[in-house]
Length: 339
Image (tube, rainbow, N blue to C red):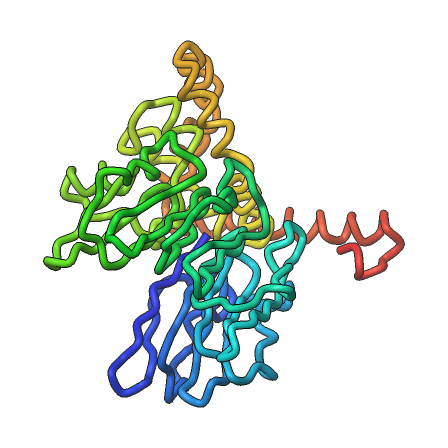
């Protein structure tokens, strides 16, 4: 889940706006940058001399790039960072729980992309992928003539040399419906949408982002912090009033404390397959909507409070988070390795 937007200026400096929870927008001192990448809670910059800088959340080691040299391209995943060296080999640091950093044997790589998984385009146009393969997002072994790849949260997109596009992974929101695209020069992948730039400068989009664009709300971006997958599947539209309430509660309360941030991150990892199942079984929608009513009601009460009441609720959530950490520490003998 990426909450920042990063821009590279023509003079090699960088600007960033968005969430500041872990300092992921602290790029004001960067210079001589030629590429940037925004990951989940961290930001990475490639310098003109082939070295790399990174700011933001560090606990998984995703910012340990200070010794990298001879790098020609970088990608930032949810909790890991990937770099392509001039010789076509690849390095990666960060959380390797799903195998997204298992790139040590890769060779002849021209470009990489990352989210929970890591995808690489080889010089011969074939594609390799490692990491979390939920929804089949790493099923790229049969691809050929690929010039660029993009990694979405639950899908992977490939641009072919003839300007057509292929995609694998989570499909229920339509983000893989790119088979008819032609004349594409660049692709990008997000939460549940895919965007392509055509050779005439126009833009095409597929998925939930395309639906939002048709409502003149703009192509869905990471700034929204992700969609309420299960609620969207249950209500049939991301614009339902109930979903807006849940989003407000997420932004104002859950993302304001460490426990809430962890819960949100967990939700976005496990919810898409559940949402897909609901979409495929419409009879479940009324049941899920009924089950969501208590959460919507509590969220509505919370978001319609005064600033003082909001501060009190956030303070209570922080205290609960601290109490849980203390309890976990005591139960495990105080060993910080398990905290």
